[in-house]
Length: 211
Image (cartoon, rainbow, N blue to C red; front, top):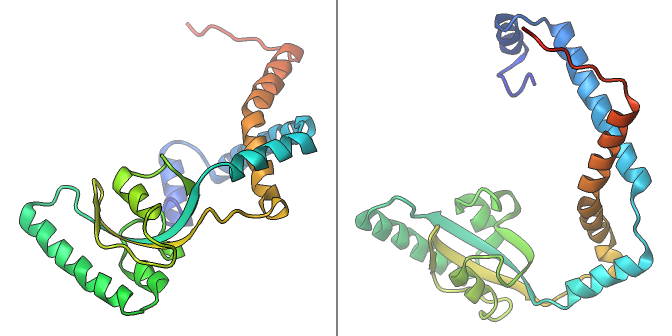
Protein backbone atom coordinates (compact mmCIF):
# COMPACT_ATOMS: atom_id res chain seq x y z
CA UNK A 1 0.00 0.00 0.00
CA UNK A 2 2.86 2.39 0.78
CA UNK A 3 4.40 1.74 -2.63
CA UNK A 4 1.10 2.27 -4.46
CA UNK A 5 0.62 5.69 -2.87
CA UNK A 6 4.20 6.95 -3.07
CA UNK A 7 5.52 6.04 0.37
CA UNK A 8 4.35 5.71 3.97
CA UNK A 9 4.08 9.44 4.60
CA UNK A 10 1.82 10.06 1.60
CA UNK A 11 -0.23 6.98 2.42
CA UNK A 12 -0.83 8.13 6.00
CA UNK A 13 -1.72 11.61 4.76
CA UNK A 14 -4.26 10.14 2.32
CA UNK A 15 -6.00 7.92 4.89
CA UNK A 16 -5.97 10.78 7.39
CA UNK A 17 -7.90 12.92 4.93
CA UNK A 18 -10.49 10.12 4.75
CA UNK A 19 -10.82 9.97 8.54
CA UNK A 20 -8.87 6.74 9.17
CA UNK A 21 -5.73 6.05 11.17
CA UNK A 22 -2.96 3.57 10.41
CA UNK A 23 -4.07 1.00 13.01
CA UNK A 24 -7.54 0.84 11.45
CA UNK A 25 -6.08 0.25 7.98
CA UNK A 26 -3.64 -2.40 9.25
CA UNK A 27 -6.47 -4.28 10.96
CA UNK A 28 -8.60 -4.02 7.82
CA UNK A 29 -5.80 -5.46 5.69
CA UNK A 30 -5.19 -8.21 8.25
CA UNK A 31 -8.88 -9.13 8.20
CA UNK A 32 -8.92 -9.19 4.39
CA UNK A 33 -5.86 -11.44 4.27
CA UNK A 34 -7.46 -13.76 6.83
CA UNK A 35 -10.59 -14.04 4.71
CA UNK A 36 -8.50 -14.79 1.62
CA UNK A 37 -6.60 -17.48 3.52
CA UNK A 38 -9.83 -19.09 4.77
CA UNK A 39 -11.30 -19.17 1.26
CA UNK A 40 -8.04 -20.53 -0.12
CA UNK A 41 -8.10 -23.36 2.43
CA UNK A 42 -11.72 -24.16 1.57
CA UNK A 43 -10.75 -24.40 -2.10
CA UNK A 44 -7.68 -26.56 -1.42
CA UNK A 45 -9.67 -28.90 0.84
CA UNK A 46 -12.45 -29.36 -1.73
CA UNK A 47 -10.47 -29.78 -4.94
CA UNK A 48 -11.23 -33.02 -6.76
CA UNK A 49 -8.50 -33.82 -9.26
CA UNK A 50 -7.57 -37.37 -10.13
CA UNK A 51 -4.99 -38.93 -12.46
CA UNK A 52 -7.59 -39.65 -15.14
CA UNK A 53 -8.59 -35.98 -15.32
CA UNK A 54 -4.95 -34.94 -15.43
CA UNK A 55 -4.25 -37.34 -18.27
CA UNK A 56 -7.25 -36.05 -20.23
CA UNK A 57 -6.04 -32.45 -19.84
CA UNK A 58 -2.57 -33.48 -20.99
CA UNK A 59 -3.97 -35.25 -24.05
CA UNK A 60 -5.99 -32.14 -24.87
CA UNK A 61 -2.79 -30.06 -24.60
CA UNK A 62 -0.85 -32.33 -26.96
CA UNK A 63 -3.68 -32.54 -29.50
CA UNK A 64 -3.39 -28.87 -30.49
CA UNK A 65 -0.82 -27.17 -32.70
CA UNK A 66 1.29 -24.78 -30.63
CA UNK A 67 4.12 -22.36 -31.28
CA UNK A 68 6.64 -20.46 -29.17
CA UNK A 69 8.16 -17.25 -30.52
CA UNK A 70 10.04 -14.14 -29.60
CA UNK A 71 8.96 -10.88 -31.16
CA UNK A 72 9.76 -7.19 -31.33
CA UNK A 73 6.84 -4.77 -31.60
CA UNK A 74 6.84 -1.09 -32.46
CA UNK A 75 3.37 0.35 -32.04
CA UNK A 76 1.65 2.35 -34.78
CA UNK A 77 -1.77 2.87 -33.18
CA UNK A 78 -2.83 6.49 -33.67
CA UNK A 79 0.19 7.32 -35.87
CA UNK A 80 -0.11 9.14 -39.20
CA UNK A 81 1.44 7.86 -42.43
CA UNK A 82 4.73 9.74 -42.08
CA UNK A 83 5.13 8.57 -38.48
CA UNK A 84 4.40 4.99 -39.54
CA UNK A 85 6.99 5.27 -42.32
CA UNK A 86 9.60 6.39 -39.78
CA UNK A 87 8.70 3.52 -37.45
CA UNK A 88 8.96 1.02 -40.29
CA UNK A 89 12.40 2.37 -41.16
CA UNK A 90 13.53 1.75 -37.56
CA UNK A 91 12.09 -1.76 -37.72
CA UNK A 92 13.99 -2.46 -40.95
CA UNK A 93 17.20 -1.53 -39.14
CA UNK A 94 16.34 -3.91 -36.28
CA UNK A 95 15.46 -6.65 -38.76
CA UNK A 96 18.88 -6.29 -40.39
CA UNK A 97 20.57 -6.55 -36.99
CA UNK A 98 18.53 -9.60 -36.01
CA UNK A 99 19.19 -11.40 -39.30
CA UNK A 100 22.89 -10.56 -39.00
CA UNK A 101 22.98 -12.66 -35.84
CA UNK A 102 22.52 -10.25 -32.92
CA UNK A 103 20.91 -11.76 -29.84
CA UNK A 104 17.19 -11.55 -30.59
CA UNK A 105 16.09 -11.68 -26.93
CA UNK A 106 18.42 -8.78 -26.08
CA UNK A 107 17.10 -6.74 -29.00
CA UNK A 108 13.51 -7.42 -27.93
CA UNK A 109 14.22 -6.52 -24.32
CA UNK A 110 15.70 -3.20 -25.43
CA UNK A 111 13.40 -2.16 -28.25
CA UNK A 112 10.02 -3.89 -28.06
CA UNK A 113 7.01 -1.80 -27.08
CA UNK A 114 5.00 -4.82 -25.99
CA UNK A 115 4.72 -4.57 -22.18
CA UNK A 116 3.50 -8.16 -21.94
CA UNK A 117 6.76 -9.66 -23.19
CA UNK A 118 9.43 -6.99 -22.80
CA UNK A 119 10.87 -8.41 -19.57
CA UNK A 120 11.21 -11.88 -21.12
CA UNK A 121 12.91 -10.82 -24.34
CA UNK A 122 9.72 -10.81 -26.41
CA UNK A 123 8.81 -14.40 -25.51
CA UNK A 124 5.36 -15.92 -26.02
CA UNK A 125 5.27 -19.64 -25.29
CA UNK A 126 2.96 -22.46 -26.35
CA UNK A 127 0.07 -20.51 -27.86
CA UNK A 128 -2.39 -22.19 -30.16
CA UNK A 129 -4.14 -21.10 -33.31
CA UNK A 130 -6.81 -18.48 -32.74
CA UNK A 131 -5.05 -16.87 -29.78
CA UNK A 132 -3.06 -14.22 -31.66
CA UNK A 133 -4.06 -11.69 -34.32
CA UNK A 134 -4.10 -13.35 -37.75
CA UNK A 135 -0.94 -11.90 -39.38
CA UNK A 136 1.06 -12.71 -36.22
CA UNK A 137 -0.38 -16.23 -36.10
CA UNK A 138 0.32 -16.82 -39.79
CA UNK A 139 4.00 -15.98 -39.29
CA UNK A 140 4.26 -18.03 -36.10
CA UNK A 141 2.93 -21.14 -37.85
CA UNK A 142 4.63 -20.78 -41.25
CA UNK A 143 8.10 -19.27 -40.74
CA UNK A 144 10.59 -22.15 -40.35
CA UNK A 145 11.68 -22.94 -36.80
CA UNK A 146 14.75 -20.92 -35.87
CA UNK A 147 14.14 -18.38 -38.63
CA UNK A 148 13.12 -14.72 -38.43
CA UNK A 149 10.12 -13.26 -40.26
CA UNK A 150 10.07 -10.16 -42.41
CA UNK A 151 8.20 -7.23 -40.90
CA UNK A 152 4.64 -8.26 -40.02
CA UNK A 153 1.94 -5.61 -39.68
CA UNK A 154 -1.02 -6.02 -37.30
CA UNK A 155 -3.47 -3.58 -35.80
CA UNK A 156 -0.97 -3.05 -32.99
CA UNK A 157 1.96 -2.10 -35.18
CA UNK A 158 4.99 -3.66 -36.83
CA UNK A 159 6.43 -6.96 -35.57
CA UNK A 160 9.57 -8.96 -36.18
CA UNK A 161 9.00 -12.59 -35.16
CA UNK A 162 11.54 -15.31 -34.46
CA UNK A 163 10.05 -18.81 -34.27
CA UNK A 164 11.61 -20.69 -31.33
CA UNK A 165 9.79 -23.99 -31.77
CA UNK A 166 6.53 -25.46 -32.98
CA UNK A 167 4.57 -28.45 -31.70
CA UNK A 168 7.25 -29.08 -29.08
CA UNK A 169 5.25 -30.35 -26.11
CA UNK A 170 6.38 -30.59 -22.52
CA UNK A 171 6.36 -34.02 -20.90
CA UNK A 172 3.52 -34.91 -18.55
CA UNK A 173 5.76 -34.35 -15.52
CA UNK A 174 6.96 -30.98 -16.86
CA UNK A 175 3.38 -29.88 -17.55
CA UNK A 176 1.87 -31.30 -14.35
CA UNK A 177 1.95 -28.13 -12.23
CA UNK A 178 0.47 -26.02 -15.04
CA UNK A 179 -2.32 -28.54 -15.55
CA UNK A 180 -3.04 -28.62 -11.82
CA UNK A 181 -3.24 -24.83 -11.72
CA UNK A 182 -5.57 -24.77 -14.73
CA UNK A 183 -7.92 -27.35 -13.21
CA UNK A 184 -7.77 -25.63 -9.86
CA UNK A 185 -8.82 -22.35 -11.49
CA UNK A 186 -11.69 -24.14 -13.22
CA UNK A 187 -13.05 -25.54 -9.95
CA UNK A 188 -12.24 -22.65 -7.60
CA UNK A 189 -15.11 -20.22 -8.44
CA UNK A 190 -17.86 -22.78 -7.68
CA UNK A 191 -16.12 -23.95 -4.50
CA UNK A 192 -15.80 -20.34 -3.33
CA UNK A 193 -19.47 -19.60 -4.05
CA UNK A 194 -20.63 -22.74 -2.25
CA UNK A 195 -18.37 -22.03 0.73
CA UNK A 196 -19.63 -18.47 1.12
CA UNK A 197 -23.26 -19.53 0.76
CA UNK A 198 -22.71 -22.15 3.46
CA UNK A 199 -21.21 -19.53 5.76
CA UNK A 200 -24.22 -17.29 5.15
CA UNK A 201 -26.59 -20.13 6.00
CA UNK A 202 -24.72 -21.00 9.20
CA UNK A 203 -24.27 -17.41 10.36
CA UNK A 204 -26.76 -15.21 12.18
CA UNK A 205 -26.90 -12.19 9.88
CA UNK A 206 -29.06 -9.17 10.60
CA UNK A 207 -29.26 -6.30 8.13
CA UNK A 208 -30.56 -3.14 9.71
CA UNK A 209 -32.46 -0.57 7.69
CA UNK A 210 -31.00 2.91 7.96
CA UNK A 211 -33.57 5.66 7.86
